[in-house]
Length: 285
Picture (cartoon, rainbow, N blue to C red):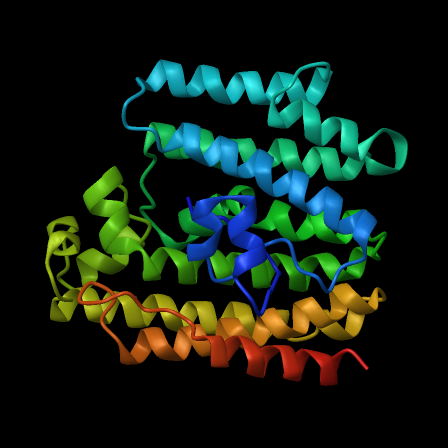
């Protein structure tokens, strides 16, 4: 599972210091748009999620060992007292006002368990349910630690789901080759004449291209629902981050329509990040 959320960092180097894997992500979490107290919580959340992701994707571990590893993280998050990333996140979050943030961290584990079980996405609705666990909690965590209002949740949920789907499209070849996972809606693939075997090829088949475009059409709908988010956020840094991320998501969606992600890695450039940051500054005024 690719870690996503409404975050942006114009320079990938700080994210890379969190984890080597962070440098390869489009939406690294340690944005310097955020104030220091919130950023510390976000970094702890990222490290916790990265630890869970590494466990779920570890092909050298058995299914039961991976599930046990996730359970240990959950216990650390609930009980604290350990040196694991779950316990560390609990210490940084504290109690009381951070209870909702803790709940979002717990929700994230459902997606990692789904990855261990390799639950297929037979329909778009299945993919959206997966995103409710894998991506939506990231945005809600950010909203929670900033004390944002409840009306920010629906557009944040849409943005986070869109980011997750875009990252799945970006990585669909690698996900299939390395992990045997397909996050494309199975009924759409069947309707377009695509199969899982097409994901192992060096270029998109016509059916897989049509499936991908159909998925991008649905993702554009999510991004449309997310457009109101920056205007609803009160914290200026988070508002800037949300506006920038929305622009980055739209640029990545356009690039995925024009490029074959099986033939070569589809990435956002430094220029994309700079333009998004400038646009975010304007939107955050």
